[in-house]
Length: 411
Image (cartoon, rainbow, N blue to C red; front, side, top):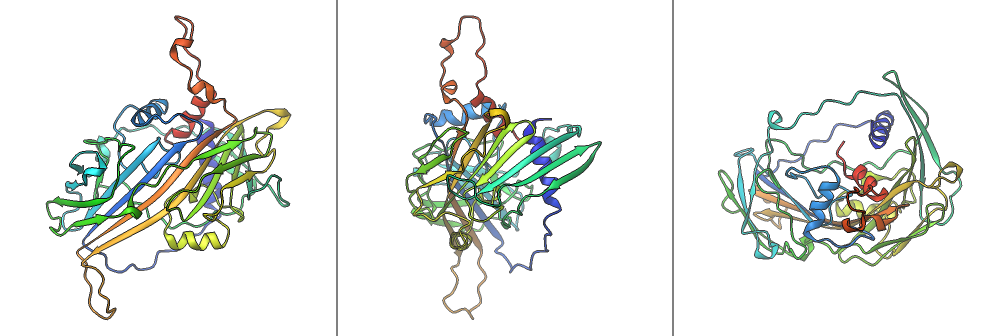
């Protein structure tokens, strides 16, 4: 079993005992037609900007050749460039195809087909991996600063032996983030899909008039998006320092950002992992590398779970990634800049709260910008040209490419 898969499975098992999920409260009645649009920008620090070729190359590195369906923008790390996901639920005609007519500035054609996902029978079936014996130790650190703080790290050693799981120690519980994502279920009409998974160009803009039409779709489903709903700029992230040193991460201010968060995971060897985050609160981790509502961002900036927009750098404590005996592992640092969220309903909410309001539809647009920096990896191997190899000899896979395969591989 792949080491990263072992880590994810064992930590998920350990985490399952740490949280009790309460049933959600009753939600107010929703409009009959709802649209969710996720808008993201992703960059790779230290790698050349490959434009549209970036998605193709990352896909090949991850071992994928087929269509890249919904969702794409929620993945971190993601392929380079601008990413767009669209989902529609029409209770009048669930799972029926529709057409999203987009502004010319999106530069992706006049319209995008919204289709239900393939049925389970048509999806490729994978045999489950055999559960193997494994032992994984995870060390957890948090906070910006050159030195490890008192009380750190939290250490968890998780074992799977003979199909039975056990654990020693423990990690700080993560931050609870409500699930606001839309999954690829048959009741939705989605883009990208098996018919059209065209990449958005680097010059694309969401600004302008959008209209969705189709069987059962309200004729009034037409809305204008402004700058707050547009793609955010790329994060100009850079890192300095060896794995055995304090690594300094720095960046330029990101327009329209409401807050920042960084999280890193390093593999010292197949059984020893290190996780770190920029949060002043223990336990905050990868669950925050996703779209967040503005109210949560504002609250968590005040509580120092997230970094404020005035922050421009963060130091990772010295030596936390260094392995035993001077071994140097590999890792990845992920960063997110949380952007604005736009909500539009028709007809608009009346000014008088006592007046009845039954909207026909609503649209939610979420924005973010993310970046990934590889740690402990010689990036020169990524840029090596095929002609540099002796004739007849296959190029050796670089450490960077191996790590990228692990990061982008679906589990």
